[in-house]
Length: 264
Image (cartoon, rainbow, N blue to C red; front, side):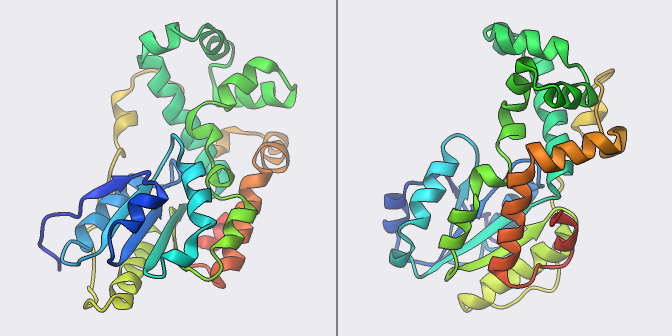
């Protein structure tokens, strides 16, 4: 098992950043609330004995930088791509939990955005927000267009972008079968660049206990939504995310174990 210091990670690199190093590269497209931090830590740890450069695309302008990368892939034949995915509705609810909890404790930020503050007060539970979206209420859209709720699979990888990666070496890691997919991904990358395979990994667990420290916050689960609410979210709000998942499944030819639960 690799025992070297973890690989340094470069965040949201420009295309020019990638061209600076003539060595194998791994670009990790970290979609929020898909166990991406755990995946990034594992990649950094279990590729630490290699000469691979590790890059992570997450939030901010990551979607624009991924689109730029997709348009110029011919210059990077030594690139491997890793994408983290999760069943889109479960990912969105996890994003609601995370985003709204963080906003509930960051009073200075919320106070500086009166429209968001008023909207958060109007929709204090996930089912209430979904009902507001069903009624096409502007305040509900303000909340849903914030943070990881807004930046889902299709924000990073819409169908046209996915098709650009057709000739790339791409691995998909699913939240639903994280350990199996991650070990397979690490070994495929190691094999591609001539490094010995590893037998197992200790799966990092990042951000898994934050809910235990939040007293009284109304964390949500999929089971709290009614069937009409679930259908609305899948058909109207998250349809592009499900389409992105379907395009990814066609791209890689066969999902790693567990991805069948994420195709909608």
